[in-house]
Image 1 (cartoon, rainbow, N blue to C red):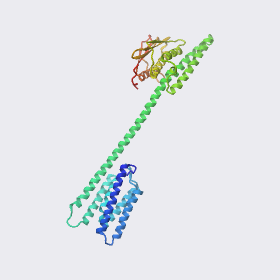
Image 2: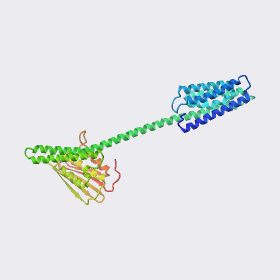
Image 3: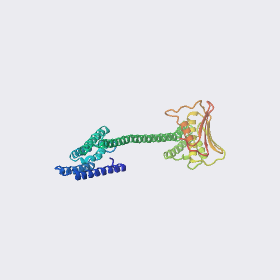
Image 4: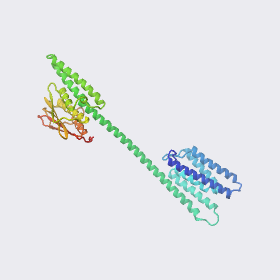
Length: 397
C-alpha cells in the first residue's frame, strides 16, 4: 500500500488490526481447546513466529504502490508467511481465520490471474480445516460460508484494483493533455511575440532603414553638385537613425511608440509626416473634428498603422503625395492614409521576405477593437482606413 496516502494508511491500519485480532482469538481458542498434546510447544512457537514474520514483512518488504508490480522481497515474504500459516493450520485448526489478512495482501499485490486462484486454494484449505474439526452432523455453512465470503472479498478487491488502474490511466492522460496544452500555449505565446516583433520591426526599424537608404542615396546623387543639400540629407538620415534606435529600445520592452512619449497622437502623426517627407514624396496631416484624449493602446495602434501604411506607400506605391487624415466623431476615431500612387487591383499575398504590412495593420486594428479597410484602383492610388470605437471593447485576438 502507498503509505503516503491517508486512505491507504487507514485501510492498512484496519487490515493489520484485523490480523492481530484474529491471531489473538485463534491463539486463545487453541489454548482453551486444543492444547495439551505433545505439539503444544511447537504450536505456540509457530504462532509467535507467524506473528513476527507478519510484522517484519510489512516493515522490511512493504507492499507495492498502486499500479506497480510487487518486489521480489514482498513476493518472498507473501509465500513464506502463507507457508507458515499452512503448517500452523495443519497443527492447530484454530488458526483458520488468520488467512483473511493474507488473502487481502495477496489480492492487493498479485495480478488477478494469480491472485484469484491463490484465493481459491486458501479458501479450500479453510473449508477442509472447518470440516476436519467439525463435531456432529456437517453444518452446510462450513462449506458455503468461506467460499461466499472469499468470493465477495475477491470480487470487491479485484474491482477496486481494476478501477484504480483505470483511474491511473485517466490521470496519466489528463496530465499528458495538460502538458500538451501548456506546450501549445507556450507555442502560441512564442508565435504571438514573434508576430508582435515582426510588426514592430516592419513599422519602425525597416521603415527607418528604408528612409535612411533613400536619404543617403539622394545625398550621394547631389554631393558633387549641391553639397549643402547632400549634408541636409545626411543629417536627416542621422536623425532617423536616432529615432529608430529609440523605437527599438521601446518595443523590446513593450512600451508605447517613442513619438507618443511626450506628444498627442495628432502631434505624433505630424512628426511622422515630417520624417517621411523627402525627395519624391510629400506627406501632410489633416485633422477633422474636435481632438480628444485616446487610450494609449488605441493611439499606439493608430500610429503604428500609419507608419506601416506609409512604409507601403514609399516601397510599393511610387506615389508623390500622401495624406494622413485623423477624424474624431462622437463615437469613434478614424485614420485614413491616402496616396496618389499606382494602386492595385488585388492586394498582393505576403511573401517570405515582404508582406508584413497589411496583415500587421489588420491585427493592430482588431486588437484595438476596430476594423481596417483598403480601397485601391490601379492608377488612382490607395486609401487605407481604420476606425476604432471610442467605447473600447475587449480586443479580439
